[in-house]
Image 1 (tube, rainbow, N blue to C red):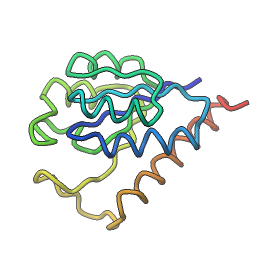
Image 2 (spheres, one colour; image 1 turned 180 degrees about the horizontal axis):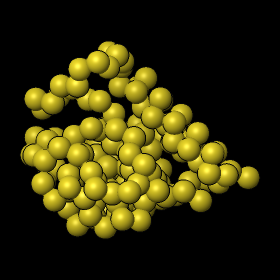
Image 3 (spheres, rainbow, N blue to C red; image 1 turned 45 degrees about the vertical axis):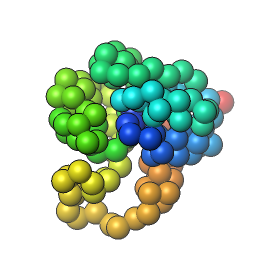
Image 4 (spheres, rainbow, N blue to C red; image 1 turned 30 degrees about the vertical axis):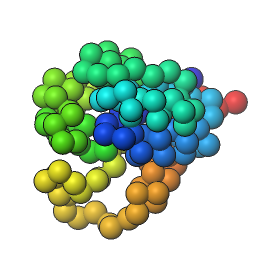
Length: 142
């Protein structure tokens, strides 16, 4: 069974959508939600995450044990998400050996050139589809 760590901040809307979509594409996976604040964590837990934790240490520990880390691209950029991503969080995610599925959210002065202008729901669906494919390739589906 794959461990999927979903990281989000602020209100946790993206994380919530990811949890719901991944639950459909990889129902057997263990989904761990880590929010940069309690609101984000709560939102992801309500969406169906198996476990949840909040804060910098939760990110740093979680990325060591996850097979896949998913979230907005800001989780690898220090001081992004309006300052909610600490340099230590960005370092931990960026240096993790986990597969990273990063959604290119062009906000907070981080603009990614060369990507399609997709809606958030379309990006979430693509991310969840890829996570499901990774789980299938690893043979973790019955």
